[in-house]
Image (cartoon, rainbow over all chains, first blue to last red; front, side):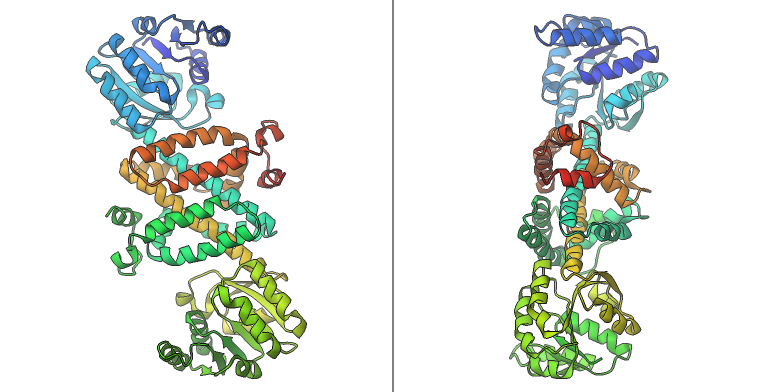
Length: 290
Length: 290
């Protein structure tokens, strides 16, 4: 294996530092800013620190490397694959670690497929600066098994999702909705609870409902219950929103929850399920498609 | 104790049926619909089933009863207290079980305070039709201890929150934001995960982050982390929102999360905390006040 980076920003720098410590050997890299009057010094400084050899063109990286980690901004990822395509060889491994969408990752695969290179859609799901090359990575696409096999000796933490480019990025982006949403809901909750000086009882009350149950169990219970009771919960939420507004508290999350429940209610799920809470969230999501 | 209901809808009917089974003795009730051409028959039928004696005016209920459960729609609760005020006696117990806001519950207290009656702000937090009189109730206000003492023998499930009217309703309405929000976020999550056929990995991934931790611990971790990293998370969320939109999936929750994080970011918390994640959510909420 000869490893090369396209894009030598924070991500590539962190990973290559970690891999070097594990004794990976020579690494080459190209960054379009390598000779930039302002930013060039930073790129060159990082390369020196990581003991990575900077190339002047992406072609040079591809002449040397057969395992390519493409670490560019999400909106550049597709264009870069088009630029690199003429220089890719059969058997090359193209690992896109950008935060691009599943659609873009699929488009990258369609771009490079005929070169005979294998693609890895790699989605980093941890703290890169802390974990460096050990950052948890979800991976999908035709090159995933080889990526894991090659990088396992150097301590990389890669979980295979599927053979389909886009799946890894979809999981990352979807999970992110819930985790960031939990935080945003939590902030709206705590702003209100603190205002009314009832934070302890609010937190312990929710804890009584959630603690000791798995996320999957709670998710299923809440989604299936909401399917049947959406209309009533919209009315109840109006009380909560009114309370926030009376107290000059921000209510952007609560209003979105109301909108979402209205959308659920518009599917008449109570009738579809004849008033009986369905057994699984899947029935709810399927019923909302029609 | 002589118990009376003002408003004899579903809530009063469920509670009185349960209390009757526990042998509470005579109950009187007034409902403005008692002789309504259309709805009168239902009110009278319910009263008969529950063995509750219907009165023709609220005054008659107050002549007979010294413990009053006021079970009227939230938007009627304050007006009803003004109507009842002239007939209240010192020592009466006025239990408002409506879904009115803390502000309204406080206004009810201000209305009836000088009569010498004691108030209970009672917030029902369970499934009334299933639990009947045993529905979990949060209670606050001057009459709370007496309410618990009187009703404990009949199996009512009342938790004292404080002596302040409005506290019980605030807890119910605030908790409700989070629980309904969890469901709404869950639906947005599952719609996307199902579309991309990655539901198992998404659910198990979030489970890895949440399962086995208390709600309080997770809440604290996510809120304090968001305080420092709001700006970066906004950019990441844009990727998620773009993905939903590309796939024609509803994104109302994700967009609200982005708005909420923008609001957090506008407080420059990263600077205020000098880049170090604070120890407690309270520091975050306090810092967002200024």
